[in-house]
Image (cartoon, rainbow, N blue to C red; front, side):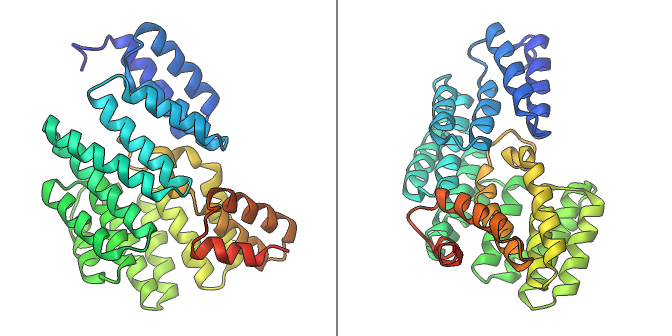
Length: 313
């Protein structure tokens, strides 16, 4: 890459991405613009722009940013298609997300990129699950894992397995991650183990396992599911603390696995869980605001959207 991009481009781009992960979107966008002044074709500069747009609730601006990214060609096109699909899932347009991902799978295959093809299949499984199509999700998931494995594929795969009730496959992934020397991999192993415990009704054990994962690596996804574990156990104040932490650290959700591939769709249900926690604590005005924010992303409905709508005053 250093032969293709000058060090000034790489340095400023990394600065922009680090600012994005730190939720400093203004700095991230400003630095990204400076990179484009040097090299207008450097595709990664559009990720902070899209991330800021999503954080601001501007879906159309995020879509335009990813279209601009895709227009740079090569990896930019493949990443842009992932971003467009991610944005569509975030905003509740699951059919459109599938169309982008299917296009990305075909183009990644033509380009010989197993990495992008596998990642797109795993994201496609997410889209199918959001449409409650477990059979299609599992088929897409297994195809993606057959092509390539890695942390950014195995963790979402484990979550999909759990959502379909296949705890054995999720446990296998947890066992594999637990053997890694990398703290992040072992932290995700604790997350999966915790969610398996939660599925069994072992709420305290789930909280202990996920909390031990946070001590290994303080990751956004662990905080999110720790909040859900606290909520399930009836510890609403603790749940709200975790969900508020996730909201303040939303920059980390832009690319959860630090590979600069879009994952902001994981933020979509956070307002719902904020609302549930606030409601349980008697924070009625705050809960109404959270439910309203969530419903703005899910106007066509779904189980959580229907529940949120019924909870509005």
